[in-house]
Image 1: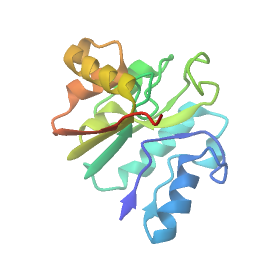
Image 2: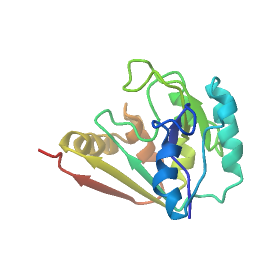
Image 3: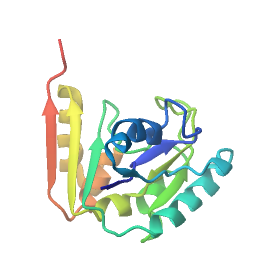
Length: 175
């Protein structure tokens, strides 16, 4: 099994905040091949990091069989976060699979640059699963889906691009 994180922070691979590190510790230990998005030589340049990730992903078979997205209270999947690069991540060149992203500093966790799969890469998946906890994110996803491509939320714009059916896995917030 080959696993590609949908996004990762521009931090060293052994940093506990790294998606690669968490996947490598859990699923890599079980024999899965984890494909890193971040090339450590590009930690200081998010645009170059995105370009290098895109090159790395070009060597994989596409489309992906499954994309699993977590959506929280703010309504963004992967690292499709508000900021100067959001439009490129959502509407960038077709066939581009990854992009470096500099989120607005006011966004939760927005002080760290990252690499994310593009909406085009996510939308090409054979199956899409969305996982969320709590009533607020569930309602936000439902509203954004109704708004479609005109949604102000990245999840709504992404859902409008999907050809595949979407499975929503939701559970109430713990008390």
